[in-house]
Amino acid sequence: MQLVKEYWPQLLALLAFVVWVVRMEASVQANARELRRLQHQRNEDQAAHREARASTNSMLAEVRTDIKELLRRKE
Image (cartoon, rainbow, N blue to C red; front, side, top):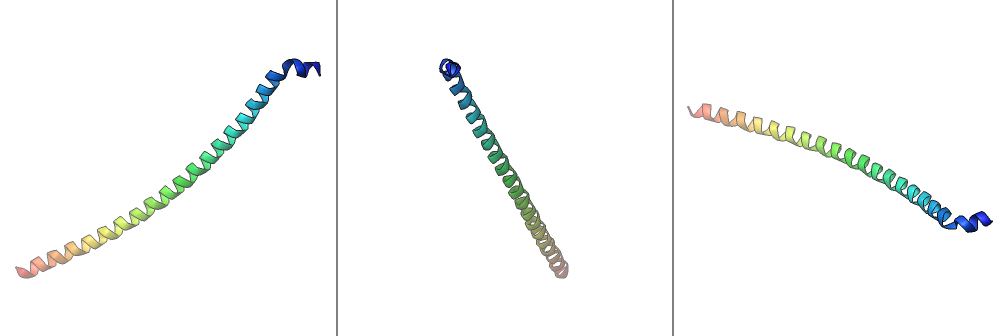
């Protein structure tokens, strides 16, 4: 008991440090989960944009072909 009375400030500081470390670990894990979620969302968005670009390029190629055909007919 004498030991606790003598070193209570250090023991309290140690306890506070342990609590802080546990909270930081939880925060790091939450941030890691959020980063994984954002990366997954980014990959999905990139795939959707890639598909949209391919569709647009296909449509533009068709329009270009139609324009060339119309120009050939006028000649």
